[in-house]
Length: 125
Image (tube, rainbow, N blue to C red; front, side, top):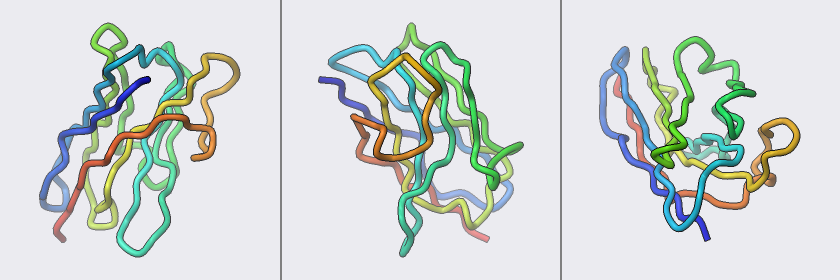
């Protein structure tokens, strides 16, 4: 069973950058993967997705052009580079794995089989 662990969160100022990592253990992460986030008082929402081979990348509108999702399958790791951070990006960020390599990488939470525990990102305005 794959276990996912996020890291890289922290407290930054608006305009700063952070790089989140999601490391898999106990099995391969060479499947479709995604980042989601939950802000205080809000439901968890989709942020970005990446296909098992690094293709099929898609971002939610609010982060497109500022965030970059990537992966290094040799290191069993996925990343989220976050630039030009805004106060509204403050949230707990979760990585998730959809245990399939077929079809498009999906953006719905219910498609994902494994989740990390989350890492807190706080952006002061």
